[in-house]
Every structure is written in C-alpha cells, then in structure tokens.
Amino acid sequence: MASRRLLKSLPSSIARPGRLFTVTTPVTVYRTFSSSTLCLDSETQKNGKPVATSTENAYPNFSLRKKAYVVTGGGRGLGLTIAEAMVQAGAQVHCFDRLDTPHPDFALSQEASKNLEGSIHYHHVDVRDREHLNQTIRTITKEHGQIDGLVAAAGIQRVKDAVDHTPQEVADLMDVNFTGVFMSANAVAEQMMQTKRPGSIVLVASMSGMIANKGLTCPAYNASKAANFEEVPGLKETWEKENMLGRLAAPEEFTGATIFMLSPASSFMTGSCLVVDGGHTAW
Image 1: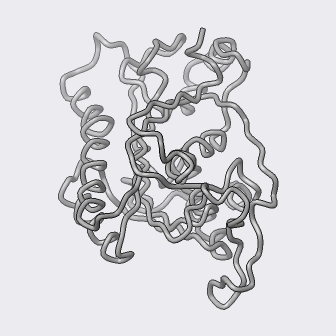
Image 2: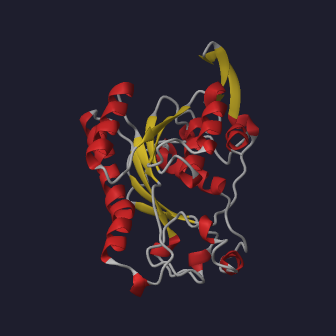
C-alpha cells in the first residue's frame, strides 16, 4: 500500500529546475535505482530521530531537499504516488484535493513520511475555486518563505459518447481539466515571481491528447483512467497490445520523469512535453 510504496526504494530520489513541462501518460520505461540513493544521516533529525535523506553525493542534481511544492489531485491515485516520491526526494509537499477528508491511502503515506526528511500535507481545495486556491497557495508560500513549483495532476473524466454530452457536462470537464490546471499554474507562478524563486511547473496530461484511445468512449479523457478497466470489458487487454512494452504502467513508473522535471537535472529543459507511454504513440 501507500506506506510500503513510500518506504521502498522508488525509481528515483530526485528533483527541481525552473520551467514549464507536460508529462503524458500511461505506460513507461521502468527505471531501477540502488537503495543507496537513501541513507540515514545522524546529523539530520526529525522529531529527535535520524531520518532518511537523499544522499547528496549520489545524483545530487535530483534532490528536492529544502524545497516546497504543491500537487493538485494529490489526495489519491497518481497524484499521491508522485507526491510520495517527492517526499522521499526530500521535498515539503502540499497536496490539494476536493475530497473533504483525505483518502485512507493518504493517511498511510503521511504516517510513513514521519521518518523521512520530506513531509506531506493535505489541503481540501477544489481547483475550480480560484479564490480559495490562490489564498491557500499564498499561505503555503508564506509558511515556507518560498514555493518551488507545482505538479498539476487534478483531472476528471466522463465515459460517454461525444454526441451525448450536454453543455454543462463539457463545462464541468473543462473547469477542472483545463481552467483548473491553468489557474493552479497561474497561482504558483505568481508566488514564484514575487519571491524571486526559480522553480518548475509540471502539468500531468494524457496520451489521449495526442492520439485516440481504442476501446474507450471518452472524448474528454485524461490521465485518471484506471477506474474504467472494470466498466469497459477488454479495455486493459486492448491497451496492452497497443504499446511496445505490451503492458500497462504502474503509477510509480511516472515518478522518475516528474522528479527529473522538478529537479536541477533538467535545468536546460523548458516548454517541453515528455511522453511516458511505453511506446504507445511511437507506432
């Protein structure tokens, strides 16, 4: 579960640059890093106890230590998985989600992070509420004296024929998947500029923005698609046949790309779209 995911050696202990990126999903190349990317540093303590920290002389460009980030859609699913990796990389992570109370997986992640240098925090924020969104981001910036970036992973979908969508249903989808993403990036960028702090904004998108997915009637499709496998018979098998690796991705397989884009390792990369899809869109 979440606690095991957080404490094991994730595909990367990484993060931070200063630009705008897009990650498209699903299915990725699996990366394995040695557990030596984490160590117990007796000089670094949390609650009076030694905590696990990123090894500074092992991939130092991938460290997120002493940095603060916002992850929208971070209360569960892919957003939470990315947030966990960021915590392991040393970041202070603030997760936004429209759930009144955190998903049980979030509580497990928070408990597991107690012995890590990074930390994870939950905020009940709907990205459609611009005033609350902006105020919460301002508060986080004031708390840390900085904000170093955003991972915009909030998104909704509706499995329905295009001709059957009502204007309100389309508006609801666009409010979250487009306007919500834009305003989240806007709010974080404003604080980064005010504090004169370089950073990165990562927008989690979908390969469906590049191609039409077979087997799923969902014209407004986005990255949060796993829930459709049970309601659409044969969808999993169809998609597995459509990429070069012949399988679907695990959520953890997107964390390495995200941490890379947040970190100094990608300092000469900006305005880029990094496709992580197991080769699906390559043929």
